[in-house]
Length: 43
Image 1 (cartoon, helix red, strand yellow):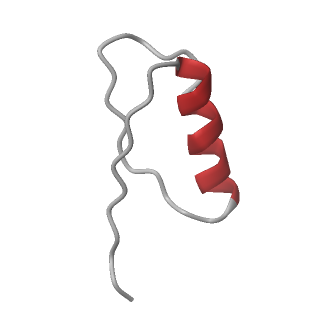
Image 2 (cartoon, one colour; image 1 turned 60 degrees about the vertical axis):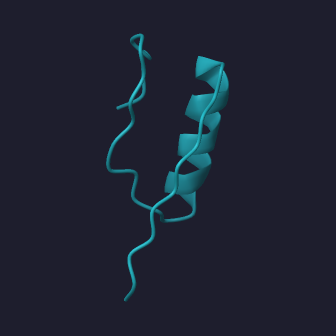
Image 3 (cartoon, one colour; image 1 turned 120 degrees about the horizontal axis):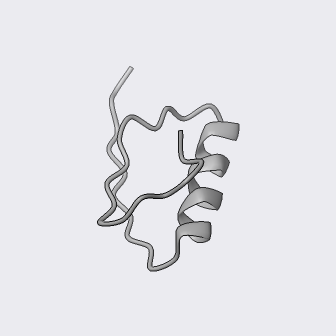
């Protein structure tokens, strides 16, 4: 199976959380998430 990389930029932590949850709900593994500030609940 081929590996894919998705890059995205968000200016709102709730939008980031929603997007990550949608990916996980579709069975896509989120390996890393980088942010200049803490995003509570992203684990």
